[in-house]
Length: 197
Image (tube, rainbow, N blue to C red):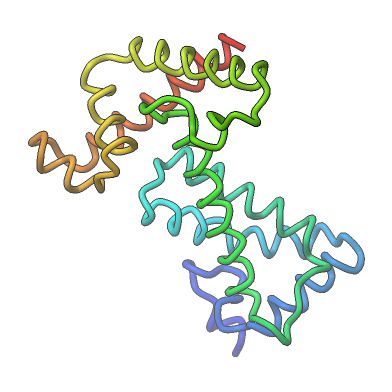
């Protein structure tokens, strides 16, 4: 009967099996059980990717964040406490925190207003300020190298913090085009910044 309830959307039949998820996580924590991790990965990875995309991440970034979440699950499995939260809650809390960290990193790299206040304070060493200024110059140069339509979407999304749908309405382009331009722009920025280091 349990086998019949397993669907194509949930081939492992784990969605309704909170206890089974906890048992799998326990096996990962206790014995680094790869089969248990594979089952957890099969259950959570697609859900995490969808979650990140609903939050506005491009598909490639959503996949990266999903994999980063699963890697954190592998390393932190022993920290899971079923008395404090269910497995789903615990995993999606890790995911949410990783998304917040990613947004902070992106905002720091793409800050158009110059040096962050905490680095501009008098107590910060001159070499640290110089490193920040050089990094800022590389980011500005990388942004300037983008095609105008990609640069505009990046400015509206990251500097003006506009949702993707609003950007699409403002520019008169479909939501998919907004996301595609952002994904292409971020790939170009990563490549340009990687070469500059």
